[in-house]
Image (cartoon, rainbow, N blue to C red):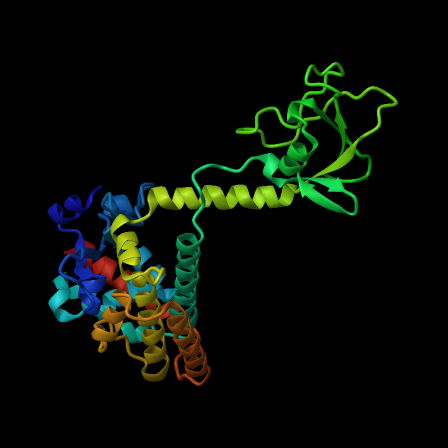
Length: 356
């Protein structure tokens, strides 16, 4: 089933423009996001093919089945709650039955978690982008040998530097485990590049090997040094390298170019949502109302344009988080929405829709 099917079969209860156009923070080139609620046909609802939501390929048009919609309302999911506060100029269609769902019936102290903690996650996301921009990974991947060190007196040297200083080719070397010591190896050296002792080298292939290479060592041979492989450091590096280049491949090109253009090295759109969510959370706690169309769009757009320093925004956000915590601590909101009342409304609306 597609969104076009929902429209053609008259299954939609509610459809609205969401996102920046609903918040009042849209730019001339902003996308138009759509959100909505639909009711599965009766025979499909009672069958084995329950469909909780339907989205288009780009996921900027999402419609929730009525039951899933109520489930998310009971969790105080921000995206779904905002549908109940959609500005009138953003509502495309509203079935009379949908009027039974009121934001005031669902707002609760769960919003502290769903709004504020999501905002904190956005801060972490912005911090991660900040790190990726300021500390990019070079395209050439480091090898195992970049994490290997050879003992020299009471200290250690990177293995590459040690090999150069000793005028030794890595292929002349052989490694053997040192019993009871993790990732420490006795290092042996063939006397000439002809390798009469048959050592296999330090790694099988510097470009692709994930571990050092062990050799058979004749009894009585003495190691010339000991080699330590920082396996944990190598694993951490490999994960960071992989995540960085996956991010490069999948990042939103327009948002990244905007980040580079404003020169503050953080995702400005993420930070805009941090302040929007925190401000909405505080309003919910203090007033028990949901205000989707923001009263301070210019401030939010200043963030979007990168007019603030990253550290300044993080400090302001942390102060706002403290205000949100204080507001919820004294809020008159119930701990959770009334699930029984929500279920009663759900049943009533579904039955009335099927009876039409």
